[in-house]
Length: 366
Image 1 (cartoon, rainbow, N blue to C red):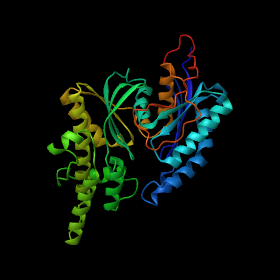
Image 2: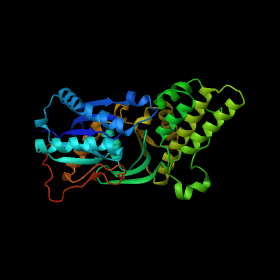
Image 3: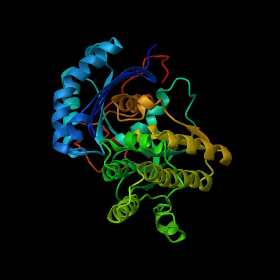
Image 4: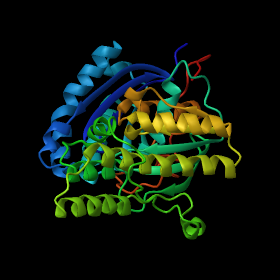
């Protein structure tokens, strides 16, 4: 018998993601990005993102259903990102999911965007079972978080997070300093390919001994961004050409060094020989390469979901809901809303104590 068929809606930032899964089997993953509309502003504009979601939702749902070869009536449940993210963007997805669930008389699961990034890993059929506990490093445009995952559906602990600019934001801002286009991540990567990562020793935020007590697993990239700005300003003021490739490579190395060092420190401290990498910035090849190399030396196994599932997408939201259903969790009520600061420890939002958990078909498996 089949596992639950779930449609997931993700609208936390600038990508409208609709995904359909059957348990842990990915059937469709449709993404409509509004990145081009934000490029003229050099960053995501919340109002523009919300309007783009409104325009993209229906065509994206239709495309996902067609790709999966199913109809709305076939669905067993609907899932949606409740937070964290941009409030206006989240509201669009939450409203659409509630409307679908009510119209179809289907259970609705409101879930956490960050935990969804972890759930993306279970859609990789070749990766094997996700073992617990595992340390998860999530790096995206709006979030940099280090988590201890004891159970995907019930126990996720926040070890540390960004205190100012997330890593992705820092890439965008440094790219602007170097007069590179938006989005900054791929552009910094391209520029860094010909640069020397040891040319400039930029600061590693919150990595000094004095930071360890209060901020051992927290991240700060604002100071790094400022250091790059000062370095560039000094060279320009002196009439010297700015070696863009060396600056890009040195900046990227500072970010990667902090991310990998703190993640492996968490693995060692909690005696967890597993590290999962997620979020859109994981597309950065240097980050993946350094993480794999240093983790191997430390005896830590690294898991990376398929890169197409690392960016924001609806499939990861559907996968998390399918796991919640399989673990017997009841659906959410209709009283939940968009929560831009939803804590990662709240995996599912507003579970209905009076609802009945959806019944899995006899003999089904996640």
